Each structure stands twice: as C-alpha cells, then as structure tokens.
Image 1: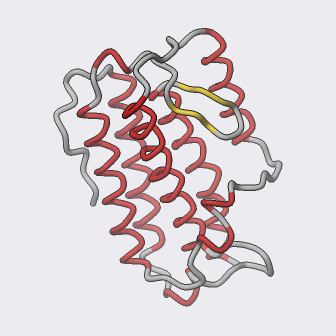
Image 2: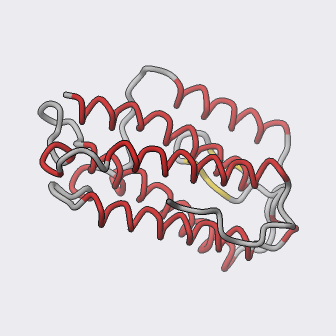
Length: 186
C-alpha cells in the first residue's frame, strides 16, 4: 500500500485531495494488476499497441518528466505569470480532450522506443511509487508563492498551475487505466 507521507499543512485542501486521489488510484490499479502473470502484463493486445506494463511506464515517464521540467524551469526563471481564467480554460480543455475517446500521439520521449518491450510488474510498481514520492517531496518543498503561477507546460494545452499539473496526472491516469485493463483482459 502506498501512503500519503509528507507534511502538507501549507497546501490547500484541493491539492491534498488531488494527491490522495492519485495515490488511491495507483494503489487500486496495482492491487488489480498484481494477480495477473507477467507474461500477460507484458503482452500487447494487438500489433503496434502498448502492453499494460508499457502503458504504466508511459504514465511514470509523464509524471517524471513533468516534475523535471518544472524543476529546471524554476532553476533559471524567476518570474512566472499568475494563474488566470485562460489557465483554467486550458486545464478544462486538457481534461476534455483526455476524457474523449479520440487517440492522440504521445510525445516521443514517453512513447515508442522509450518504453521497454518487457519489464517486471513489481519493479515497475516500485519505480512508480518512488516517482510519486518524489512528486510529493517536490510539492512539499515548493515555495508557497509558486502555487498560483503558470509554471508547468503541458505539450498540448500550454501553461498550467501545479494544481493543473496534478489535474493532468489524474485525467491522464484515468484515460490510460482503461487502456491497461483492456490490455490485460485481451
């Protein structure tokens, strides 16, 4: 079981709930998948499709590179735009497109050859939990004045706040969870 670990007393309730939901959803998925043999978790449902474990790696990389991006951005840039109605519209658009049945090409860095052909469920689960702990630590250490800034840049919709980034993680997870379950049930 993956537990919400840090002292997040400075975060707003919405952010804390987003992190809790991300962790609950991850725990639920891992509990569902641990009963399947690795052969099935590594088997793509059809040609040119991702296996369940490849889809999990895609989600891990999306979270990892998102955190790396904002760390790097914050290391050299000091002035960021404040979140506004346009930022909120971008977040709404992102949630709408991720909730749609349409397929979208994933960025190259988190797809294709960057996803392993075969991997271990338990090692993948461990890596994801470690990535999630890194996310929590990053947010725990985030200066309070950064929470209402447009720092995260989603490849399709543009600049979002940290809550927008967490919203992306949730919608992205929800979209791909369906894909993971279809792959193992194939």
